[in-house]
Image 1 (tube, rainbow, N blue to C red):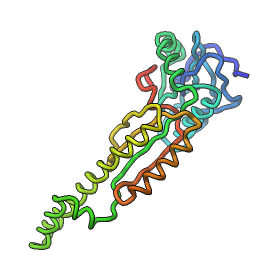
Image 2 (image 1 turned 45 degrees about the vertical axis):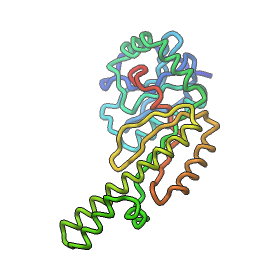
Image 3 (image 1 turned 60 degrees about the vertical axis):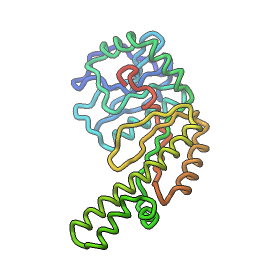
Image 4 (image 1 turned 90 degrees about the horizontal axis):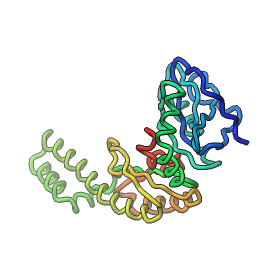
Length: 253
């Protein structure tokens, strides 16, 4: 049974922490606590066909692992009973009235987004250059080959630095070429793909939208690709995650 929504109240000094947006009547697990050193209860704030999942914002909110995981775990738990538009960690509104205004003004967009992510999860794949098989890199990459030849012909500190830089660039180019193939193959298994922000050291940061039951097949595909291209790129899979990347721009998420 859905938890009875509480009427709007005076916001806590830190404002109102918004965890996500759900359809009206979506249940919130009884006794569920939120983020912060002293987590308060989580409740729903309904407006028409929607409801925001909120709690009092803690006085001091930091991106500690404990709170990041509490935020994410709540979104995943809510997702078991229906679609959720998860907010990014740290979404704080001044008061409940501002949350209600936003719900009312974005109702159509939110309902459409909820339909889009219903029964779905996000899987994230990052790729970084593999550091092995340098001999093949020398053979395949002319820039690296020239740098090594120069270092052998005139050894010294500067030549070693140039060789090191050429190898680093070559490893990145090689991994980026493979990452393009990896992303294309994984996209064929997903309903949608979005590029994530640039991550230092990564040649790929992409999120994939999947039906909840397809995550096993997707994970197997990542393992297969990692084995195939392991000398060129290292793949890192994270998920299932709430569909953060597929609700961007909806209700300020």
